[in-house]
Length: 130
Image 1 (cartoon, rainbow, N blue to C red):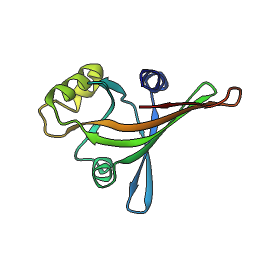
Image 2: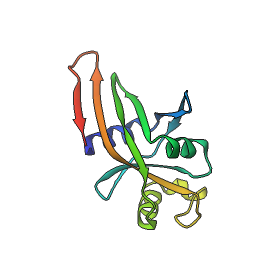
Image 3: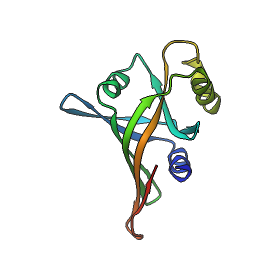
């Protein structure tokens, strides 16, 4: 899990896929942090992506960096603890211009189960499950 988190942070921007009914939705994200032994991302509860995840917690992330890429599939859930929100915002202080751990909008989403596949054109795929 640590290797996955480090890769996502190194990429800076990765793409999160959700489902809106039968329509796939893909959007850029940039947060990744391990909180309480879980890989977590962050969004706002007022966003469509949060509503989509609430309706269907299955997501996939795709990230690319220097000839290597990562596909991360799994289910996520909201970690609604104030401590989790504060830890995420402390890890990404630039988000504090838009979010606060007490604003009722900040959502920390933790992976319940995940399969990550690291790939490249020159090495065999490597799978990590957590």
